[in-house]
Image (cartoon, rainbow, N blue to C red; front, side):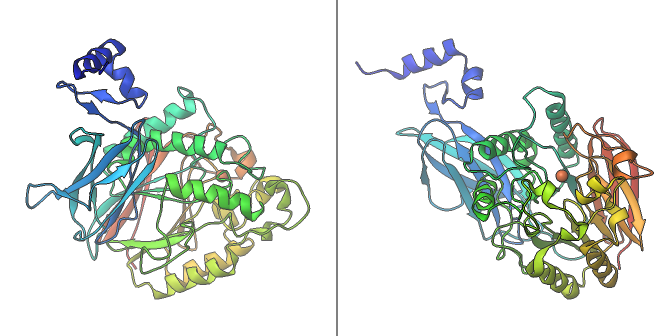
Length: 450
Ligand SMILES: [Fe+2]
């Protein structure tokens, strides 16, 4: 017996369309048409002056997929970004949209069709392409949600959802996620031999970031819970890198003129008058001993290193930059100086570590080339201290429940709250506001162009 569309429609009514959508099951439109849904909503990455990457994950049915785009100002017709393509159930689908104009706003929509059906819109969003020159913009900085460590509905996950909502209200043109974006119980201390934990954590990260990521390009960086420490066997770190690049693609060495790493783990880009340099303090710190975990393996604070290649690349990028503003982003300093020797070796202490280990060299380089702000995470509180004119700024955390106190970090003045950093740039002033989970600005500072 052939099932009619009417049967399908009635079944979906009985099952509840909302329930079907929540499960990623195909929904049924009024006329009886099967409307596919996505298992992961769009995630925007690598915005340049002329291109952007859109990543989705398809739902439970095989589909034909199309991405359409139109400029906010200009013709009102949608145009397809490339040919229609087939997307198998559960598959990641990415579009590299090209031929865009710099500093321009675009709307996009993802269309899908089950076999034999018409294309229907399954997701929409909006983005701004990379800005050039003396213009203003708003961006966001988040840190340490540790997504994957805590159950749905738990207090840490609610903190992430609250912060995502607050960031979304700022309408930032991009977000820089300062690391420990994902975590699972073995990801810090043990090599990984399968990608089960990483898949789970990155799936949850994509789901909770989705309200933001559909309309805000994401720049991620690597913390000590992403499972990519250089102290792990290379195969383990490479396996975790594969999962990271699939779920949260970022710029590679070819995306921007500043270059970076093909592994998408360090890179630099400019946006208007600002140069952002994004570093990886984890993956190039090599094993120093025979001890069992990366944490135990750091026996000297001088063990932390960017590695020769990243270090000389950083120097080249800063030396070549004539941007009025230069900001460096990293999970924690390339050294440590906290309240105890254990926490020091763990990379805590932010500005207190400005002259410790390899961070001393990074700090001197930042002085020489006029870096105004060093953004970092890891310590889970808000902090703003100035060392030699450079703001060491920690924009809180958005999910990690541990707010480390003075007895751990050694910080004298800090805010033990969840939240995010709001960066507002004008050609004559860049302002950073610390926004707590309730949405209030609890601190702000500003830096002037060089
Ligand atoms: Fe961390």
